[in-house]
Length: 273
Image 1 (cartoon, helix red, strand yellow):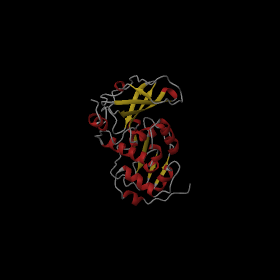
Image 2: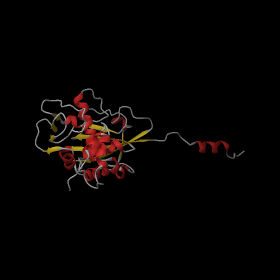
Image 3: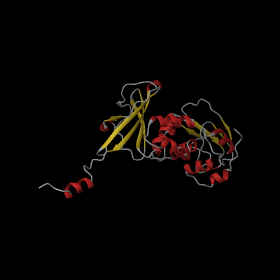
Image 4: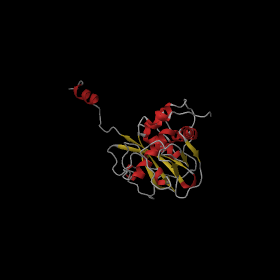
């Protein structure tokens, strides 16, 4: 791929919102039909080096100058937001726990807030909304999530979280290890879970690499306060090393009985005497 040229000032002028920053970068890119060229984007924004290497207790780190005029990135960046401040003498350090933070979390301290904003920026950059419409159409399923992960060269976990966040249906995704609950990520309208860490989940018989059909589940086994007249359906992908990913969908059931038109006809139609 030819070297990219990006006008950094035009990107920074959109403000600090992670989504708008990512969109400003894509506005300057040629139309893409492949994975987003993160390394080339970083180079075009004056990040001098991207280096991947084993890290102890860290997922990523950024070493830069206070002015953000140049930077060396190990995996992740806080580079474009001038309000982000290094939270250690050695730069920005991101743990695995930090990588799961999102804008929906209640965050009080500076470090975790910055990590949440960085995560939001990263997923907006890697999976631009303008390219997601085909994946979000129709009935949801794990097949669409797997296709998203392949299209954008991201993990299935990241694709699943993005999918349930943006799909119009009430969805959640549950990640398990050896059939036990690890964590869940929910769309905005999804009810609260009742599951706790390491609690056994009803996933059916494992079948490595297979995706189950959607099956109706007992809502009380998963949800803290199931909405009245709702149905819960689950679909599971069994992965290696005892891991699994389950997509949950809540459907509201029309439980109002006969409609107004039926009732009107019943009371006003011809009667036999």
